[in-house]
Image (tube, helix red, strand yellow):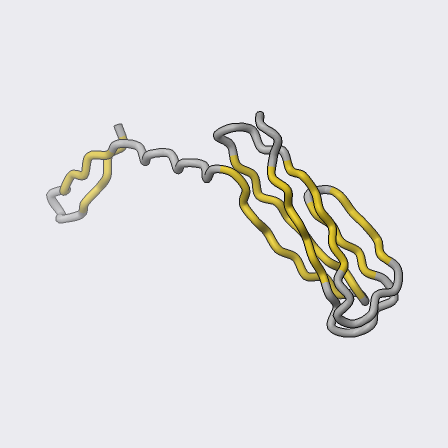
Length: 100
């Protein structure tokens, strides 16, 4: 594993709020009263193994409202190939797929 990715979550409420909570990749920071358009930031380093990938969730909660976002880091897992099939036509005209 080499280091990781530095992920930044930034929130700026549209109105004054009594508190603002930022959550990112399992870390949480609670900020005190925050003015409208005042920027709050949480930075987390997320470790990802070579050749692997991970989805990271971030969320901001203020005044009982939450907004969340998901970002994928690293490689995307390859979809497994479908099993090989043979399609046969029955005497009544129906097609059936036979999995081998």
